[in-house]
Image (tube, rainbow, N blue to C red; front, side, top):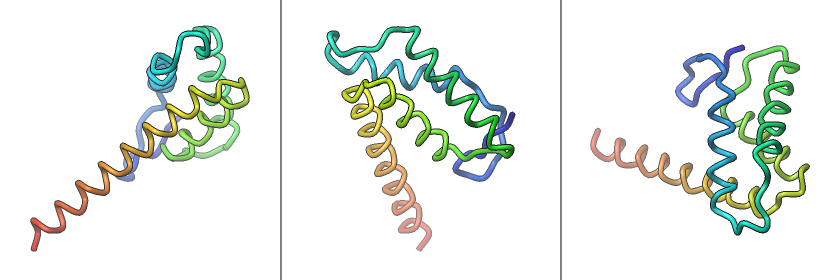
Length: 106
């Protein structure tokens, strides 16, 4: 299965990237509300299955939306909050970089 990156390139789907992102969000919350490694693995697998069922190459944004929903479906709302916050911060950084490039091109 392939995915569509933000720049439009198609690359091979890598479940490890999902597991790593969820693990980082999980590690950012208090230990008492953390998910288990098995829960993280199940979230990653459910996202992979959902992507396969699309019958097309999903975009990175679509995959991230699926990850958010899967984390919340597990009741790990604090982890979901960390994941969403990180996505938002990265989005702002990308917009800032785009703005900088536009200014430099003038």
